[in-house]
Image 1 (cartoon, rainbow, N blue to C red):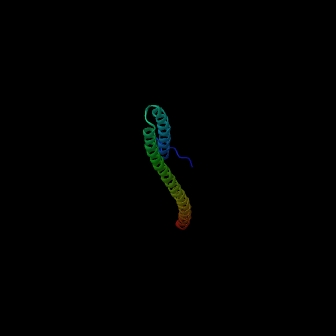
Image 2 (cartoon, rainbow, N blue to C red):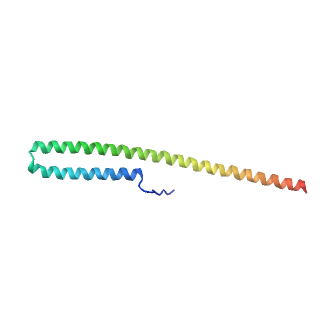
Image 3 (cartoon, helix red, strand yellow):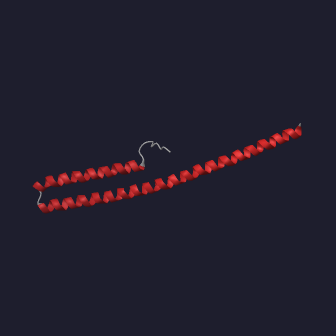
Length: 113
């Protein structure tokens, strides 16, 4: 079963947001290092802690989003499998009904002759 994303799937967007959060973390680390020369040590530590806390919150949110999307993917996959099985079952029933109808038509043709 192959799935094609039309634009960007929710999982792709969540992955992009996660990558962006990691980039922000790297940027914050670089900025904190540069500010260490300018700011007093306590101000740099406070700024770093603030950035880390914000990024950790983003990462936690993105992790929750990713987990929710994985759960939904599994649920939808299971539903799709059930629908596919239902379709196969329905095909068997319709084939059986068609065969019986054909048989009845043949019998009626024999009676009509």
